[in-house]
Amino acid sequence: MFKVLITDPLSEFGIQKLLDAPDVEVVQKTDFTPEELLEAIGEYDALLVRSQTQVTPELLARGKKLKAVGRAGVGVDNINIAAATEAGVVVINAPDGNTISTAEHTFAMLMAVARNIPQAHKKLVDGTWDRKSFQGVELNNKTLGVIGMGRIGTEVAKRAKAFNMKVIGYDPYLTNERAEKLGVTNGSVEDIVINADFITVHTPLTKETRYLISSREFEKMKQGVRLINCARGGIIDEKALYEAILTGKVAGVALDVFEVEPPVDNPLVGLPQVITTPHLGASTIEAQENVAVDVSEELLHILRNQPFKNAVNLPSVAPHVMERVTPFFTLGEKLGNFLAQITVGALQEIKVTYGGELSQVETAPLTRTVLKGILSFRLGEEVNYINAPHLANVRDIAVTEEKSTQSGGFTNLVSITLKTNLETRTISGTRLNGFGDRIVKINNSSIDVSPQGYLLYVQHNDVPGVIGRVGSILGQNDVNIATMQVGRKDVGGDAIMVITVDKPATAEILDTLGELGEISSVTQVEL
Image (tube, rainbow, N blue to C red):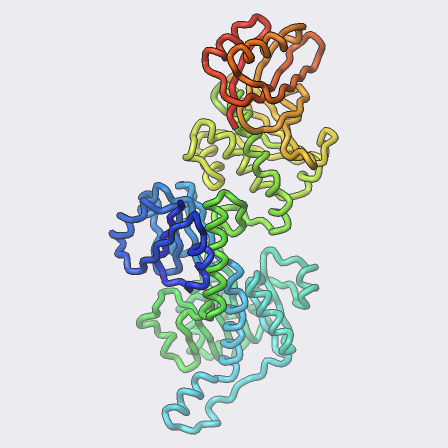
């Protein structure tokens, strides 16, 4: 049984899959003090939070069993990503669950700031019928600048096009082809600052985007520009914004987020040109259910060692690419583990080469599985898919990845080379339709072995009778041979045997095999 702790309020519908899982025990407790949470976290395999719980390095260090932390939402500001990565804990979020909710809220704020709706409402509620003070502007034929053309920015742009707005989009990954397909102009931040009548930001808050819009940008903007921020506080410099409003450069602002939340004593909140909401971008019934559903499903996949996609501390990979490489995860891990078990010496270099069709796709996730297989032989459960590159790096193990169209006649080929202070060894494997994962080459010897169970790797001289003697010794000791594959490069030269057995051979049996004159080494491999 896996134990999952939920420490922030979440939709019961959203976590239903966790509640229904027969192999999961769910504990919901939303009133932990930080000290109580530190005491409790050690018994849980996964932690599910929203924005209230602070996942600190100390909490992660106490969570000895933690495999994953799930954030039911997009932002992970309350989770220490670096500490989680070093601890080997997967951090997942729900990047798609609140996309529509936030896009719709952005557009609601856009229209409200254009027509002064909250201000007019407030005055009417206070008893004043005032039609003259709240003259607005139309969206029709105006230019909207969208800074950040990710999921949410793209949805905002689509809605703006429906209102006959001209859209300039900026994103470091926005291509001209994609911009043309969306019907937007691919521009720079400066293009937007100079030309836009309305500007909305949809980037994460990073070192590069903090104060992306500040005094310099306000100076270049049109007189009477209007801004919307439903992304993250700190992208717009609030002090510079305040000054730009007072000078009249900025006619209106709609803010759902602030640099400090709640915005206590924030002078922007009191200005008549500013409309605000308390971080409501994702606050719809549908969004809260969607993010909880998404994270619950991902947590189940992680706990059950199944493929998952929304890890924050793993490289982002497109779903169609993940679909291509996921079938090779087990192969990559077992090839790495097999090679680590038969290689001696202090590991210095790891090279992973992808041949055939695999050379045409992003293989970073697959390389992580290879590293896990290699390092777990020595490090055991300490290593996982998340911290494998980190553990290799801190041990000064050089890791390289290469692509090649050469694949030895196979559709796909994964080759791994380990270099130690004593030797260099290589293994290659593929997936064959109808046969699954196969080891097809070890060093220069071609073989065909399924990488599973107990195997004996025997290096010997290619002379008559050696195979029979090995079989006899195993038979005399009640070790049944399931399969045997032999490989050699030259007649009479060095050769190998890879023998699949039904149970592990004892140390005494291995010693007896090693005493045969034609055998140079015998290694038992367990996969």
